[in-house]
Length: 210
Picture (cartoon, rainbow, N blue to C red):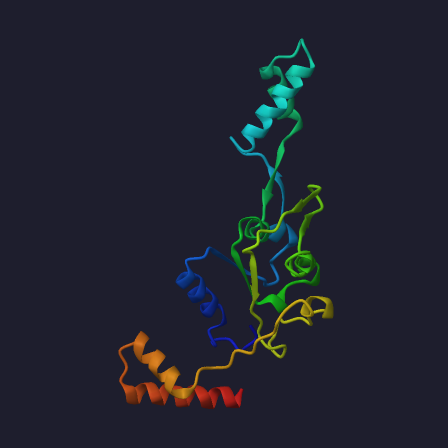
């Protein structure tokens, strides 16, 4: 969805998901976004994280070594395995079939966008590779990706590469028509119809000047 700030790009997606009662997650793709935040990574293990997995590994170790108890195996694992994998929001959305809303998609560093290429293939071929973990995520059939972009003349935007743009369907989102915008203002505030019309005229003048 490509349009000026204030055209309701993100609101449209949130509204559609609310009406459909479909899970949605939103991530701002500004300069602070990283591949790890999107896809996931290894983080220090906190109390209880991955306990079931550790118990299974400890049991396997104890079964293989007659003189090793499950408790001793757990102690060994606790020393060795200080980190646990945490899925990022993009990975969770792909696994569970959520709508993933990437706000300000063209503001992200290019390296952050690389994981999207496999996800935006045709439905039968799409995938998400977790290279650090050695796993290829089985993408849920309901997973949907939506991006929003400000036009390229806005500060902070970056040129999108052709490979990624070729996987997207660009839709222009204009400002509302005057009557609709005035009606929206009235529905959200206590202004009169005449005041709403005046505000819309003022906004149109400002946009034209900009």
